[in-house]
Image (cartoon, rainbow, N blue to C red; front, side, top):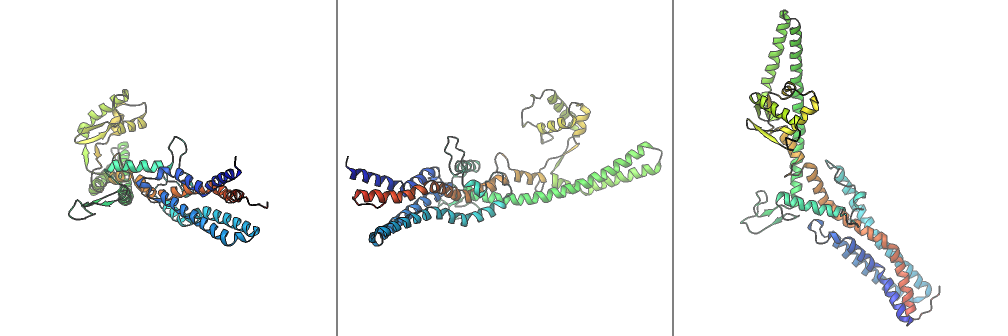
Length: 412
């Protein structure tokens, strides 16, 4: 076989094993990021950027070969070393620059998160750009899936908010001619739920303080009552008991509006207590009787029987009697319904089956802002680190076989 053809084939092979292989590795590694709105154009930008870098290195090599390398064998070797060094610099420097620009900003936003449990640190996320197994556990897949789930949950159609022209005017505030995307939706939710968290903390602190005062008045009354019952002929003890009772009732009356405001409208279940006790006792005897999430409507109030049953079982264990169960059920139940109740703010923070929690909304908003860029950079870094040594070898091997093809004598 003609040696010239062999040298030419090897020259082309090692040429392709340099930057072309690097770019191909990037495309393969970043494949799940392409054509995904949530991932943006970061992956494509890296591929285009390294194509431009490759062209730049080729131009530099051509110029150096033409004006420096041809002067002598020593100059030629200097050019090869310079091109190899330039290639290493061009392959490794972009990720270093990216880290320098992005990592500090990422970490500052990461530290400000309400809940970090579902968000990875900068160092961790850069290694999760692609799952090379069939498990599909990379953060790229998770982010795409989360984006789709939020679209379904809130009836959205895009990742980014958009204007549309089927309305007479554009009015973002009232939704005229404007559609939320998942990113802006979670940003808005995060803002609303952070406000709800602040209100929840304030309301909870107020309620805890109020209930502590009520408990103190009740304890004083109970103590005075027990003292009187031990000596019912003692007029002073009877007076003390009556005064403690009057103070307790007066305080409850004074704080009644605050209790309703913080705990919601209340329902007197005294007339229905016997029925409720019977339901709970029956359920204890047959734990399969009540399905999960069962609610019973009493006096217009939906009571979560499962929750109450768990409370009963946890407190009284096996010593369950109608009396013990009845003692655990208050005569008055607060519904949690109202504009400023603790439970309203708590539900807003914790979310539901049809609404994201604060942690979920904030973590997605964070991921949508940072993950696409960082994951693409992680894929770029992965390809660069694997191929950098091969690129250097490609510079020398391509030159070697190119000269052999031309029949040049090479001084080793």
